[in-house]
Amino acid sequence: MVQPNPDKSAWWIKDSYSEQEVEQLVDWWRQHFWLQNHQTADIATPGGPHIMVRGEGCYLYDIDNKKYIDGMAGLFLKNIGHRWPEVAQAVNEQMTTLAYVNSGAYASIPAILLSKKLADLTPEPLQRTFFCGGGSEAVEIAIKMARQYQYISGNHMKTKVISRRGQYHGSTPTAMAVGNRGRPAHGIFDPLSPAAIQVDPPYCYRCPWGFKDRTNSDCCMLSVKSLENIIEGENPHTIAAFIATPIPSGNQIPPDEYWPQVRELCDKYDIVLIADEIICGFGRLGTWFGMERFGVDPDIMTVAKALTGGELPVGAVVASKEIADTFDDTEGDDAMFHHGVTYGGHPAVMTAALKNLEIMERERLVENSDRMGRYLYDRAMAVLQENHPLVGFVGGGLGLLLTIEIVKDRKTKEKFPGGLQGDFAKRFTQIVRESGLAIRAGDTIMLSPPLTITKEIIDDMIGILDDSFTQIEKEYPPGS
Ligand SMILES: Cc1ncc(COP(=O)(O)O)c(C=O)c1O
Image (cartoon, rainbow, N blue to C red):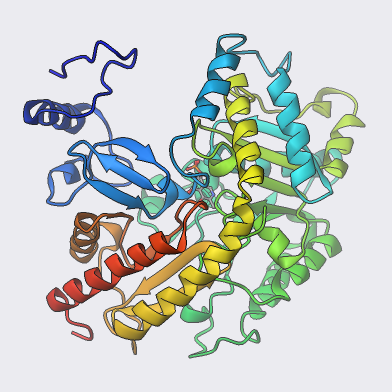
């Protein structure tokens, strides 16, 4: 049993833990706490998931006091890094003043202030925010909002949603329907939403149209042509929305003309453009929002993760004034948006988000993301791409989102089997973790450290990966 620390209200927080305490906790974890996106049994594998007890800046510490660089900022969200007592203090003050109001009837002050702040930070047309509890939920809500907007605008047939093949938008049914249908899980949960249609993404390294070794924009623009073909082929009067992330990961950066042309198509056919900014938002790409990189304003934006810097769970849908006004100007049963969630706009969460944004502005983290992103990309190219044949492709350079494609063979671009659950992925993750870098290593490695990162920590991160590739290449020789 974990011995309580009498000095703490959170009595389990201590400087160190005995072997028996660790064993007990791992045993309860194994039995009772569901590990996400893995088998819970994986906690027993060497180098498997650990119990983390502390965070400080860009570092995490496990229960044995081992230190790791948090190479993914949690899961693309601890953009401000770990441990900000000023956020905890503000949340505490808000919670001991007012901890909950029903957002269907009232608003709290921090909810109003945060919605105004988001209106100021996001592209100008976006003016009104619907809050919820996470990213998948935000995607569900955005799609419902787009569909109801079309309905109340008189476009009753506009019900279908187009998305890009192979992209991730979340784990709930509609988010899965517009997401990566190549995942085995889709077979289990089909039928998902029948109204979701997919188009190939602009993805040069694995060109959907089979062109080889191109990095120019010609073939990528086929993605826009395909989008128009699908819209025409399905009947434009049936398409409600197009949803996509500005860039799904560092390895899929579209040419400059891509997003402006998608915007034009959406305008031409009255299609709501939903930008899923759940990873790209809040400085990840070196701009406040990913779409700024491409000079395009979406009609709806989904955000989550880094809105609170991971301090508390959150999701939100920011809609354009035009969409909000259309709801305001409607009469009758459909005047209200048919969606409500108990925890939308929770005052403590809103407070955490406000403080998080304050810190981001004060510490100039968006600018740092831009600067450090370029440094990270240059180092990854010079050290990893240059020296390691298992590195197929390094994509990045737009802020602190870098993706390394791992291949068995550079020529064929073949991947190791099994994705994140494969033997290669498990072994490589083990090597990297034991070297003090907390990331997932499957057929890709994504690096998305806190935006507070320095050149020194980037050098450490690249050094660990350099050594880890050297080690894994002995065990899995390239080209074999
Ligand atoms: C682009 C994108 N959309 C949606 C989601 C789902 O967010 P959540 O995990 O908060 O439900 C994610 C999560 O990683 C994401 O990366």
